Image (cartoon, rainbow, N blue to C red; front, side):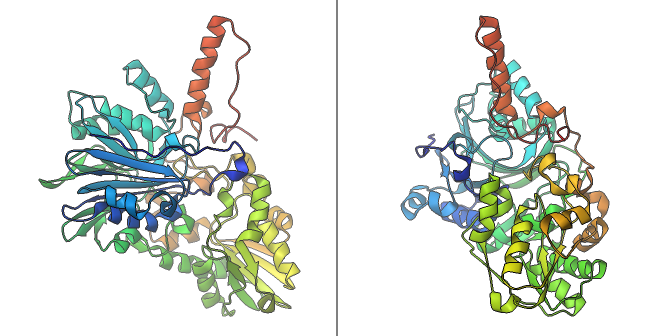
Length: 516
């Protein structure tokens, strides 16, 4: 067994240099006779939109398990010689955006642990646990070693799974998974078996596909399409799958209580993905139609903010009868602006990301369809840019309800204080961004467009109804494990009579519910 990892690149403390980021994507394949590393590479490529901070994969040939990961995009981390060297019949892969733990090489995934039995265990995680502090305390009490330097809930989970010498990985998973609270769609593996698991709420998507000579699991059906796998079914909430030489087997570790993320339909998932039987593109077009009925406008042209606003703009134009046009050209190689780290960069980001077509806009009343407003900086700059390009009226239409609450289940929107809809009503937001009118689709309209029952969806970012109970604010958030480390160090300083304790430089969503 070996764990091969590239040298970590230097990480600048300057937040403006933090890579673009989203949430996470996972991929796994069990396919004897196939080039599983290359299948995983293309699967991760299809999931790149879900995470742009880091990428990695683990591969096993039945004797050795090798992990290769680095900060950067999939195409930056892997090249042809590297992929050729990763030989085997089982692989998992991960594209990362950090929802727990900082953006460092140690926190890139897959995570790796040597088990007490002497085998290897690698794991990739999409989602976010809300009882990380509790799990960390349990691991410390049980003497679970922490040797990686990572500060993620995923790494902690890997340690817990690997720490049972008396149990197989499968049996350990059936013991550990029921103790987790929060959102998790997992792929993990040892030298011989591919595993996949999904939390009892099914917050993040996870699907199973069939190859001619094997099986694939992935965050989205689009990744199955890319590697030529046929869709079999979704991995059910509360289900653990194991795939090895004996075939595929399924076990339940929790009763399902489905609460799929509604924001997947708005922005996160690819339009060519299907979630719970509903094609994302079709859902977004229907949202646009409903938006046109709920918030009509007297205008000359409907344009999208590409690319996430495009399907809803098509629906708005179809329903309203206003011609659809292309008024903004996107530079596809610039990251999404709402997830860049500083306000200065966000404000510059709109200029880097979008360029107006002045001949299309000049002298016209324009309806602009976008997927969401988080902080408002993008829309404010966009409205200004459209007016400078000759638009005489700018009517903003948003294909989601106002985002008022932070997400603790795998999306790092912002703190409650940074969410513009938390402090302003719709008219206040309209004035803030400088639009002639502003309309959001209703929550009911969005849910109907998803074709899912309200009871099977998580819409906490819109209405604050969190389906998974949250712990105390100081025990949840992106940097919770760094915070635990600081608190331990502070205690040691106090005992030794050292200087005043030092506090963490930054914070995540931990205080988002209590900060103004």
